[in-house]
Image (cartoon, rainbow, N blue to C red; front, side, top):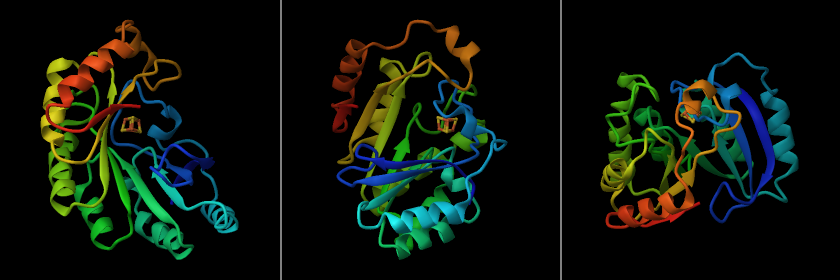
Length: 228
Ligand code: SF4
């Protein structure tokens, strides 16, 4: 398990669940506004996976769940084996994903290894900008969206509102794709300490809270939508 980071306690990353957050290392996307640039390319120092497990074993009285975020966790070969160990400790597990590995997600859900999924929708599924992801990867996101809707396990969608990727037109397409009972959360982009600072500097004006309120109202025609 390629673990690049750990938050020991969080009240905000797993709805209704006091959790720790594990960050896997390595991602197949290259979102310019990524807030975890050290986790995108798999070069940084790794935490000892057994050490992390021991820490989590010592916290079972205090924590109820573990969030596995990244990076992109579904790229990690032994993800399922590590989750089995977390489940063995009695933890609920939430997975944060960019959605590019629908088969991995399907397998984890069907084996009841994951209790909650948060899927990032960076633009309308199946036609992401080449500045976010390789085309062959983004084509699979639509499949993941349909999978989550079809299987009906608890999930949410999340969109970071960053220009030039997210506009009113794009929000409408994202919300239409996500349409259903699962919520869509919008968040404002942060532009400090990002993966591609030079790219983001080309777009100095980024969506304000007022822009997000407008986006929220557009999205609410299709899906429960909230600003985070
Ligand atoms: S924000 Fe983009 S580049 Fe960063 S970890 Fe998530 S999917 Fe990968």
